[in-house]
Amino acid sequence: MKAFWLDVLKRFLASAGVALLFGLFSFALLFTFMSLSLRVPEVEVPKDSILVIDLTMNVSDRPGGFDFEELAMRALSKRGEPQSFHLLELIRTIRKASADEKISGIFLKGSLQPVGYGSGYAALAELGEALNEFRQSGKPIVGYAVDPSLPDYFLMSHSDELFLNPYGSVLFNGMSVEVTFYGKAFEEYGIGVQVARTGEYKGAVEPFLSDRFSDSNREQLEEVLGDRWQDYLGLVARNRKLSVERLGEISRQQFHLKAEDAVVAGLFDKAAHYDEVIDRLGEIGRIDEDTGEFAQISLGEYVDRPSSVGDLQALEEDERPAVSVVYVEGAILDGWGDDGEYVGGDEIASRLRDIRKDEKTKAVVLRVNSPGGSVTGAEAIRREVERVRADGIPVVVSMGSVAASGGYWIAAKSERIFASPETITGSIGVFGLLPNIKDLGNRFGVTWDVVKTEPHADAFSFVRPRTEDEMEYFQLYVEDIYDRFLDHVAAGRDMNKTAVHEIAKGRVWSGKDAREIGLVDEFGGLGDAILYAVELARLPDDFQLIEHPRVETPFEVLAEILETPLASKLSAASINKENALFARFKDMERNLGMFGRLNDPRSAYAVLPWFWNRGL
Image 1 (cartoon, helix red, strand yellow):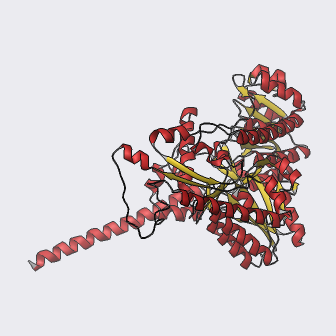
Image 2 (cartoon, rainbow, N blue to C red; image 1 turned 180 degrees about the vertical axis):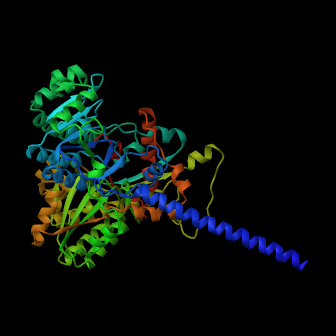
C-alpha cells in the first residue's frame, strides 16, 4: 500500500511539474507575442510624404493610453474600436509636421467616433486652429468625405482642397438638443421622485418629473444653441470663404445636400472618387514606387508617444521646471476612478496633492471638460486647488467643451479662466434627487416594513417617499450648498454675491456670454492657458509639460492585461458601429444610468446631464 501511494505522489508531482512548466512557457509566449504586437516601431518618414489623419477616432481632452479591448482585438488581428488621441498630442503632431521637411501636406478623411465627452466642439475648434497654422506654413491640406457629420465637416472645412464622394451627401441641418423625459412613465409605473433644488433654470431634474422642457429651460437652451450655431457658421464661413447668411440659407432651405448640390453651394470644391483624390495627393507629394500610391505616413505612426521603459525613465529624470496639466474629464463622482466618462473627486485631489510635493512643478493648468456631478467630489477638487495656490503654485483653468455646475465649482477659484466661445459653462445651481419605488413594488404585491430607533432613521430609503419635514430639511440643505457655491464664485471671481446670484440660478451660458458677464476671463484654448501659466510662474523657454494622467506605455498596459483575465476583456469588445435606433436606446440607458453612478453621500448634485445627449 505504501508503494502505491508513493507512486501516486510521484505521478502527481510529475503532472504538476509539467503543468507548471507549460504555464511558464505559455506565459513567456504570451508576453513575447503581446510585446511584439504592442511595440511601437520606429518608422522612418519617406521623403515628400503626406500625413494621413484618419478622423475615425475619438479626440479626447485627457490622455487615454491604450484601451484593453482595442489591444485584445489587435492581438487577434481583428478590427478594434476607433483609436483615441488627446488634443495636446494632436496639436503637437500637426506642428511637428509643419516644420518637417519630409511632410508635404495633410490628408483628412474618415468620420469622428465620439466616446464619452470626447470630440466636443471646443476641442475641435482648437484642433482646427492647429490645422490653420499648418496651412500658413505653405503646405496644403486635402480633405475627403463621404457622409460627413457637422463635427466632421467643421474640421474638414479647414482644407485647401475639399472633395466629396459622388454618392455621398452632406447633412447641414443645424444643432439640436433632444432629451428623453420619464415623468409620465415613472408616474404610470409607480416610481416616485421628490426633488429639492435651487434656481429657476436648474432643469437637470426635469426629465424625471415632466414630459417636456419648462419655459425657462427652453429659453436657456435656445440661447446656448443659437450662440454655438452662429459660432460654427462663422468659423466655417471663414474657412470656406462664404458668408454666414449664405450658410444659414443652406441649413434652412436645403439642409441635406447631394454631392453635386454641395459643390454648387460651395461647401465642397469637387465631387470625386477616392482614386481621384489619391492621384491628387500623388501630385502634391510623390508616388511611392513600391506601392504605386502616394508616399504617406499615418497619424499613429507619426505621433510621439512614450513606448518603452527607457522613455519613462527619461521623463522622470528630466529636472527642467514644469507646468503640470491636470485633466478633469467626465461626470464628477465622490471617490476614485478616471475613465473619461466619470472621474472621482478624490482621484483628482490626490493628483493635486502629489503635484504640491513635486519640486519640478511651478504652475498648474486644470483642463476641465465636465458637466459636474457630486458636490462632495467637486468640493474635494476645489479644496486642493485652493491648497495648491496657497503653496505659491499658480493654477490656471482651461475649459473644454463643457465646464458647468460642478465643473465651474472647481474652476471658480483659479488665477484665470480660459474658455472658447463654444464652451458650455455656468449652471451655478444645486439639486437633490430622491426617488422611491414604493408604489411600483405595491402593484406587484411587494411591501416593505422597517424597525427604527428614530423617526428619520430611514430618511434615505428608496422604498418610501420623504415626509414633509424631511423634504423641508433636504430643501434647506440644498439651499445651503447653493449659498456656499455662490460664496466660492464671488470670492474667486472678485464679485458681489448678489451679482453672482443674478447670473447663477442654475442658468447655462455659452463661453461668449460667460465672458461678458464675468464668469470667464478670456477666450483661448489649452495652449493659451499653458502659456499664461508659464508667464505667471516666470518659467524659461525650455520648460516641460507633465500631464496627469499621462499616456501609458504599451508595456504598462501589458502588465495590467496580465493581471486581468483576457476573456473578460474580450467579452466586452464590440466592433459593430451602432445604428441610430440602437444608439437611442443606449442614450436612454446612459441617462438613467448616470444617476445610478452619481454617488454623492447626501444626494446633492451640481450637474448638467442633458449635455450627455451630445446635441451640443
